[in-house]
Image (cartoon, rainbow, N blue to C red; front, side, top):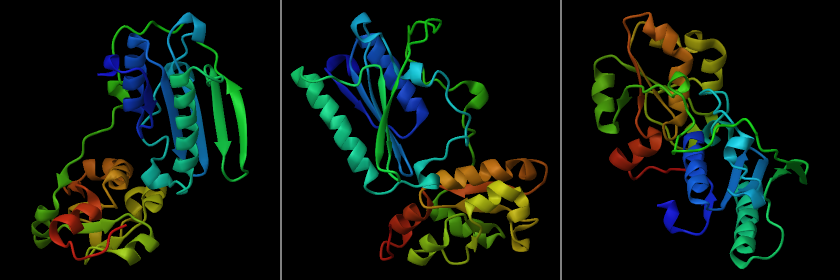
Length: 259
């Protein structure tokens, strides 16, 4: 697909996609404008194959993907609403420069934006002379650190699971529950589960199957990461709500608010 285009703007929210896009751009000699955001911080660079650009790619910036849970997702870590606009505008500026052949694109340079301090600084990206040549598209995530696949429960199946004794645990923050909540869900923020594991679960959840839920499904997977070893050693089962409370509202209660 990328081979049929002149330019790629990569604003992906996961590492696997970033590696796939980077490799495809390297193999097709397609310039890639890359941007990343988290909380108040943003990063922008331009990658391009070829000696005139030092052949720098995303893999020179991040040779290996981090282990699951090492870097918080936007759903868990949060992003100030204005930051995507700031970084997106910078990416578009780089794209216009590349299309028109004007200015000095961010080849080999990493632009770092600190929204809290309202500063910009620049780092030079050095190509790794020992890095293996890119010969195929790879997501950069090894089997050893691939995200495990957890059982899911659809919104339509949720009530039947609760009717047979399962406990629903809401891992969102209190302000989110004030907007919309699933009746009967026990509140246990994700941070408590990550800090204390299954010990953070209320007594009502002990000895029973547990279904975790969050806004859209990302944090509930992280909750399963935190309590998985405890459930693996017991007879109880753990799963999470597919699509989170947003899917529950959309499928079963469209009259309720979302966010």
